[in-house]
Every structure is written in C-alpha cells, then in structure tokens.
Image 1: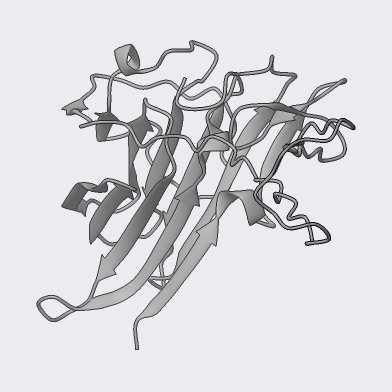
Image 2: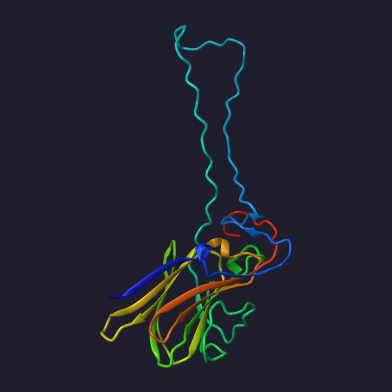
Length: 238
C-alpha cells in the first residue's frame, strides 16, 4: 500500500526558526504580523437625511435597509509561465531542517524555476527546496511542482546513493511540491510526500524546505527560516 502524506509549511510541527529580537512575520498578502493576529473589516454605510423625501411607497410601509457588503482581501495571483533552467551552483544560508548521514555536500543538480525579473519587490526572497536521498542505494524519484495554474515541473530523476538536488523557487506563489519514490514495478509508487509552500513563505527572510528519503523508503519533510522583522509588503504578487 503506497504511503502518501501531505503537509503545509504553515502548520508543520517540525518547522525550525532562527529568531532575532523584535521579530515579526508577514501574512499571506505580505502584511506585517506581530505576536497576535490582526483582522481588518470593511463596512459599507448608507448616509441618511432627516428631511422628508418623496418615495413611491405608501405611508406606513416598512423601509428596507441595504445590507453592508463585504470587501474581499486581494488574493495573490499565480505567476505567468515560469521558465526552468539549470544553475551552476546554489549557496544555502540556513541550516538543514532534518538530519542526514553521509550525503554529498554539493547538489548534483540545481534547478531554477521562474526569473527574478518577474518579482516586483526585492524584499520577497526566493525559497529553496532540497531533495535528499539519504539512503545507501540509488533511487528514482519523481518530482512534481504545481501552483494554481497547473503543473510546472514533473520529472523523474535518478539519485545516486547519498546525493541531493535543489530547486530554487524564484517567484512568489502558493506551490505544491511532491516527491514520490518509485516501486519495483513499472508505474508503482512506494511512498510520496506533498509539501505545501504558501505565498507568505516568500518574504524578507531566508528559507528552505528539506524533503528526505530514508533507507527504508520513507519520506520526511520540514522547513527552516530566519525570523527577522520584515517591512510591510504590498498585497498581491509583488
């Protein structure tokens, strides 16, 4: 029976943070958050005059009062087509979120999704996803990246024993990233792990997600981020 799990970064119990004094974060629209959540409500009021006015109603008929209309918060738009290219090298500025053993220090493959020219605010940093084969035998792993516009990347990659690769998400969006371990038969899946990466993950902090395949074929995932105060960001895809 395939083992399939889904995790959202925003609710991971194993999330690691590197804190500094006076820390704040940002919400899904890029607004500042402090220790307690804040909500904004929009009310629509109707001005009324005390002076009598002519109406088509008969005297004594009930007056209908317009109901206030709710104004929805802006929703970040999924980016347009995202280019995929290989990078020569990628540096990591946060610690590993999960323990691994004897894995090569350099990724054998580095992929970049999207271009920084598509991002309006330099305060929204890229997010890195590292996939580790922390096993003493090679594995064929199927990697799938998608957002609201559909599948962006779907590729089966052959990992040598104790190897890793990195995918750099350059453009802020709400993504899903799935890693599946192939079974012995054609098209079979032994285990898979889907990680949800929210738009709010892309702020002024350095961050990364680690997805690790263990010796027994199981898959673990976790994330790590710095936690410094970020200036307020404009809602939407900036």
